[in-house]
Length: 288
Image (cartoon, rainbow, N blue to C red):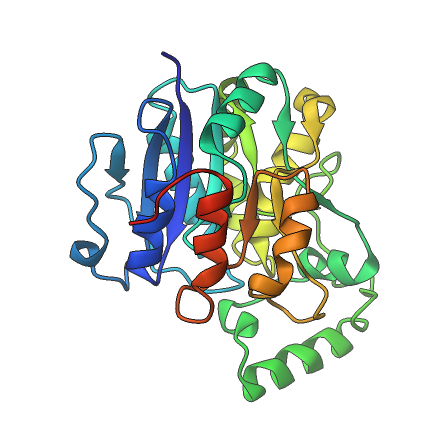
């Protein structure tokens, strides 16, 4: 039987990662796990024949190009086998519908690709119009001050003086989208081929702020595959207005029931395990 590949970015909470993997039908899904190089692989070992840990691991840092690098490494390793779709999750995601429902949906929509787009605004454009050093993505006070001064000197948070403005290629537009995609085999092979033929693309993206939200979707939307993109499959609550989405709890259960999405994030086993217990019951799966 044809399978779906789940590409998993994990860096914390090994018990939660194992619990997530346990939700998926082994006969329908294969897992490819990128474990942050800073984490201990032994803590995350799962004894299942459908779980693979990729060797090309990266020490991931929020906001810089290492996240995109880990995503690409997952795509390159998993695409050695042909799957219906390649679906990216994080270790803090969780199923809100059964894995069989997800599999059936992807099987019936194999000609489409799923990724939630982010509206292009002057503030977002500033992420690539000037080159950022990796330390500028850090959340500490000094790094934020340096980044803000740098942005002001180059034109402000929502504008870039022409003398500083850069672009990748003349007819190539940078777009933005959530990391959490589900791409079919044809699109994944196209992305890998593009990267093989455009080594300078990664060099450009290495200086883009939060490049993981532009890296893949820009390749897709500058190609004929753009017409295949539909809304993503992951539910995320950004209502708190912070740099990270809300940690979901029991109070979010009604919203999770009502959404048409198949996956949700973020969850934290140490903060609210009961919401995951409740979702296990709803999708008819026992937790480990």
